[in-house]
Length: 133
Ligand code: HEC
Image 1: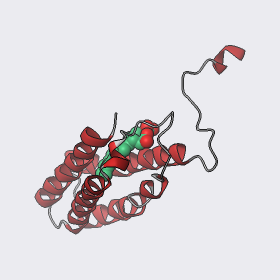
Image 2: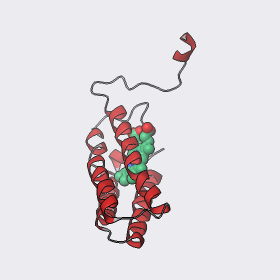
Image 3: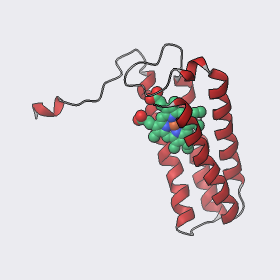
């Protein structure tokens, strides 16, 4: 139907579509992290299962950052300008998130995995509070 073209979403029309790519990369990160929370809440913990989920997380956590090039804060970006003006703090948040996912992947018990997963979620939120609109 022609009316379905009335979509409020703005398309990323710039070369290489960096905003679209980083948003998709973050969505993939969310999809990779959620199964860990489900495993923990269902009491389905096993080191082997965590290892599989951790592999997916380790792959997806690499993707978003290369798309934060200079001059890439335009619609539909939801980034705050501080990503670029406070680049060191943004990098510190990114490293906190990497350390948290490292700890999650190394967890050897349900309890340790739960604590590490809580810290992963806290690291997502901490960065979003400072750097996402
Ligand atoms: C170091 C900072 C940082 C960390 C860590 C981080 N994010 Fe984000 N995230 C951002 C920023 C900045 C945006 C906004 C991207 C844009 O629109 O330009 C974002 C956007 C998103 C989006 C929205 C994508 C869209 O379509 O608009 C999701 C979902 C998301 N992040 C999930 C996560 C999850 C889940 C984690 C942790 C497992 C996480 N993020 C960790 C900075 C971070």
